[in-house]
Amino acid sequence: MKRSTTALLAALVAAVPTALAVAREDAGTARAPQATASAYAREDSGNRTGYVTARRGQSKTGAGTEASAEVDGRRAVSSAGADVSEVSIFDGLVTADRVEVTADASRGRTRTGGTVVALRVDGRRVESGRGASHDLAGQGTLAVLTTKDDGITGLDARLTKDYRGHPAGSRVIVGFARASARDGSAPAARDRPASERRRATPRRERPERRRRQRRRPTAEEREAERRAAPRLDVLPTGGGYAFPVYGDETTYSDDWGAPRQHTGQHEGNDIFAPAGTPVVAVTDGRLYRVGTRRIPGNRLWLRNSRGDTFFYAHLSAFSEAARNGADVRAGQVLGFVGSTGDAEQTPPHLHFEVHPLDGEAVNPYPFLRAWQERRDVPAAAWLTRYGADPGSRPGALVVVKDYLEP
Image (cartoon, rainbow, N blue to C red):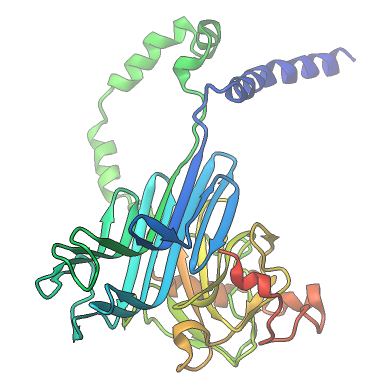
């Protein structure tokens, strides 16, 4: 009885610092996560169309626009996009088949992207790459895909002279997206009460700690450091990862970095399979940005507990489990192989990307090979959950709402 009481008291004492830290964080001493996003399709004389804005926990869509801001614990992410077709500015002085811009933010960084298709000035085809600028036949200036702070603008046209009833100084913007996100932080050490700091770092330990820090490594230790292999921060493949496309009728190659018309280069691998083949979650995680865009078609993102993100594109349809904020398990059906978006003229396939810690895309080929060979999650795991019916027929439009969510 005495031993149990002692153990209980020790557990309570150990829990006190954690409880105090949580209480102080709730009191506002820790930095709260922040996420915002906004987008609009067009701004003409100060009037904006399709304008949407989102703050933490919100997801909104407009006419060709979307914005979402997500906060999960201390983690914050946000995204925004605008997609405008059949563009005409100043009565046809500037035209384009399509303008699309995106902004994605996490960990205090914002990544922007955009494309302008078939851009013409006064009827002539002109360069539409990022940062291009053009003279508007002596009537003004045009800036293409410009970035500032956390946002990107597709087209920015300004008149320096009167033109067909449009006065000098008129300005039209087509396609704007902005996103920012900052993670929260734990209470800083200086926020702790002095009594707690003394408990955490007893005075008698300080001299010894300084001596350890001042000790210089021996020659043998330095040589061992030189021989040691560098640490590689890679995704694990031995703990419940599944190959993203079900079955054995799949083919894929290391096509990372291949040129692409709309995105510049291929930032993933294409996995070819018969239309309607189930597409599954590669790991346990949460879904977000489930919906459709012109280039990726039906697409979604999956984030695991470590913060790695995975991008799926060109799905023919979503499963009923594929909704924003849904928690899924490895092997769970998310959708079906297809050719939506700019893949309409290609054989059915899944475009798949890997973003370690939600950073820049890396070549997914080594991961795909490892997951396919290890079979950590059996290829037929989805059958265990769904039997012969995944909840919707491959290639079917499940819920129109899914196409509207960002």
